[in-house]
Image 1 (tube, one colour):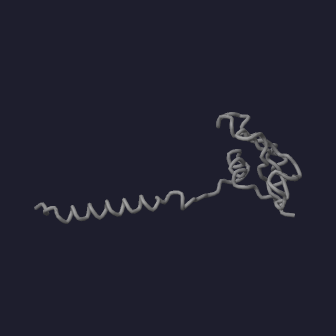
Image 2 (cartoon, rainbow, N blue to C red; image 1 turned 180 degrees about the horizontal axis):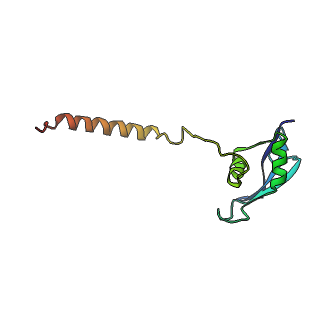
Image 3 (cartoon, rainbow, N blue to C red; image 1 turned 90 degrees about the horizontal axis):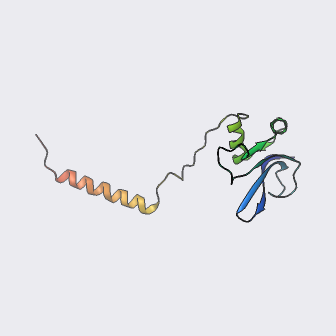
Length: 122
């Protein structure tokens, strides 16, 4: 059975809170899970103690059993010092859009023409 440690959403519309659960990866996000491991409330301040609460003993047990944390849960575990921090890269996010690339190319072309037209200083 492929196990995941992931978030299960609760709460009403625009007022989310999440349960950190150990679940079979084939089950739906808010469906059946094996065990509740903690909670996450994104509406609280980032420095609040109650924002993320985890039962570290049980989290460690499930990690030892081979459960894979999702990206968001692994960030919580990295902050808690349970798992090693891993490199992430979102290569597409830093790339400017099509229009911005066209503007940058036009600006570079204009500067190249201006530099070619300027007399050389001696």
